[in-house]
Length: 410
Image 1: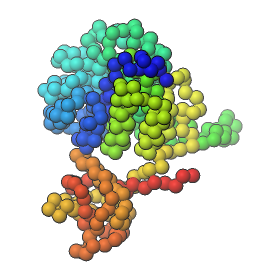
Image 2 (image 1 turned 30 degrees about the vertical axis):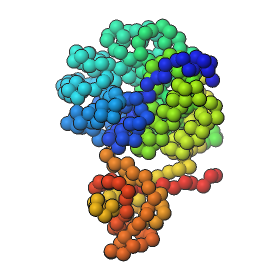
Image 3 (image 1 turned 180 degrees about the vertical axis):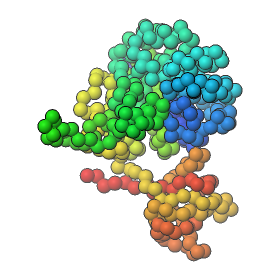
Image 4 (image 1 turned 90 degrees about the vertical axis):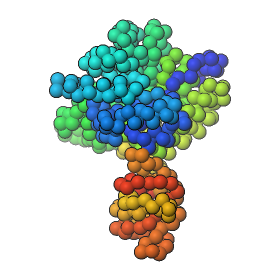
């Protein structure tokens, strides 16, 4: 752990949390200092489609209404045919009052600066030294999001060499390619990761064979799948580097994940501020994080180039013992009855089941307290049925219903 006295004196970095919609914003608003998001175009998370250009003013207004700063990612590869639309997107960003645009393509950088927009340089630029950071500062950028392949020592050195704001990742998915610049998905499937459409072939099961066709046994099948980054146990050391912002990745993960991760890091940063951060508390926060979607945890490149312990050879996409199973979809909501009509598509429900109801503007956790079918109260319902489900708060048509299950320990 870093020097405790230095820990208390160092400014606490801004906590920047990735969100995809109003539901995610609503659950992290009390934890984050800023959120980053994207429109339904020019984003490395192409499946994050909830915020359209016509929605941008309202969304940014909601962010500002929560007292947070709003950073918009425009961070894909830009082709000639994209340039007119880039102008439209950045004009909309200016009108909406975004606090900064996150970009790395020079066309977007120039267009943003021409419009007087504040600019954060994306990690896609792979800024890995102080001179590179200063270069972007001379262009007009106010912040650089550093390469994820840097060690704590290197980050501290860069911070000492430049006055520009520096941001680093503290939690979330890691890519097996340098700063996410990957071509594997495009080569195998024609889906470009650099345009936000990665099919994640690095998360697939693979078999390694030698030149005679014999299979090489490596203790697992997920040979390219990097574990998720988790720095909750090392925040004092990261604060000590002098960076100004910590970023939580996860714009495609569910709102429950966003709530839990932002909450843990808020508590940890507040503890660093008041001097109550301890190794024991950090382990408790990590234990809570392990209950959310994760691929196993590592410290990435912060303490050296990761070895075999940085890859999840034996596990699939989710190593958490707590998982969500699809149940059905909300058909209607009846506020006077405090109930929703739900069609059970994938499986049934029983009174007492823990559930989550989620949509682009909805996030609700509760137990199944009541079920009604054909006007009669029932204890359980099967897949294929349409039931009345008692709900504690407003839900909306087409919201998805999930059952929360805890898997047995192997």
